[in-house]
Amino acid sequence: MRKALILLPFLLAAAPALAQSPPGHEVAYGSAALQKFDFYKAAKADAPLVVFIHGGGWKRGDKGNATGDAKIAHFTGKGYAFASVNYRLVPGATVEQQAQDVADALGWMVKNARAMGVDPRHIVVMGHSAGAHLAALIATDPAYLQKAGWGLEKLAGVVLLDGAAYDVPAQMADGPRVMGGTYEAAFGSEPARQRALSPTLQAAAPNARDFLILHVQREDGTRQSEALGRALTAAGARVKVQGFAGQGLRGHMEINRRLGDADYPATTAVDQWIDAVLTR
Image (tube, rainbow, N blue to C red):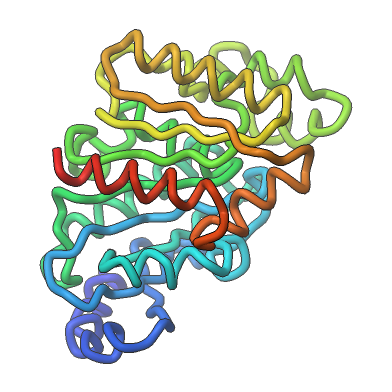
């Protein structure tokens, strides 16, 4: 945390350059090598903030290569600030520690929101694949954000892009032939731990208030997304679940890579949903 605070004056000094150019600035929210995020400042003060959590099966991926090319320019072009978060990876860290990393990064951003030119009331968290799982987990289990010094009620909304393992036991039963080793490395074999790391099974209130759950046409991903949507709706959250074209790994990667492309249908869906959420 001390390292992150040292970087704060740099953010203030760099504000004009950030507003005019796409490159971001790396900020440390903790002391570990991967506890960093890239921040892209908006052109105006008190901007909404979109925070992206990368995928990679909980064991790979990086804020520099898994964010997708179009998102940063698209969202900063709409007047939002944008951040892409790194977190420690399996097996060097547990999924619980990964979720806490994400929560701690958000906590750092909230505490330093004014200096970053961000409105802390208008923060939207977005994740893809394993990053969608982590985003959903911190948005359904209040312990992570509470430990980071703030609460679920401060999340304006959550966007999930073709996530995996919202219900860990069901996912592990569904996909042992292709991804079984990845799930076992992330979630182990203890049923109680698997349930605790399942956003669908943690969806009893309280939760974040608004969710947009997007998926492509993968059978397990569709089932997982729809089941999470039902559980959150039953608990009182406002939820929209929407499917898009795309099959298999190609479709799974496309929804992340192309989000922000004006010609990609999911971009319009996300824009309209965020616009509605931020006016509530």
